[in-house]
Length: 281
Image (tube, rainbow, N blue to C red):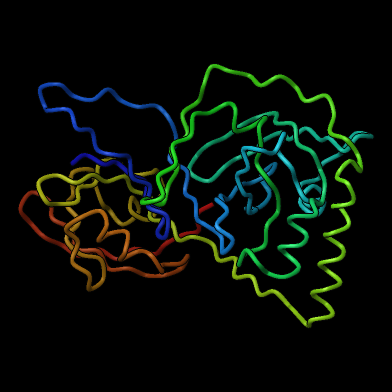
């Protein structure tokens, strides 16, 4: 099974194996593997930076007309809005290496996010919604058996959104402040654990029952430790590695600053190297 991936500890990005035979190799599929998680409310959540600031937590919503940013995010990113609440982002970077320049976003504190944040319903603080003007540029493959979404760019530029009505939610916009008041009355104090991912910086694939390194990111912990393409990963700490799933499990709880001992096989010789994880996006 061939399954290249970029390891960022708790998010292991796996490209699906092809069923084609070796005599009929599968063509390379363009795109980016984006780490995601499901919130406690079962929303698909990804992390992104806005103008280099962040990362922030965004949920994907195919029914939303645009990219929405909380006002606090816009302030931290130094965004200026027009009279209708729109701002132009110099860069919008979704974890996994998906970078988009010049993205238009609506700055607004959506009552849905305000309410969930006030009561801590999602289990993590939400900072915005990724909607149509971003999602329509990609074909996105959802695989809820893996920890990644596959985004393939399309030759399509969504038409600009002219306007989004102000106060046209039938009074629903009052729910956000109402839920904040309710949370205070009930004594609810949400505890969000926004922990950064540990970053190893390798791509691997399974070959004949072994996990083999195929590529290293420059200056990554793996590269600094002297790992090379072609090395077989035998163990991480005390966990034996036979499959990519084993490697994902071994790194599931790793965080920036953690020191790992990785046993590798190279040209018949085994060795153990020590790596210090850095912070991913």
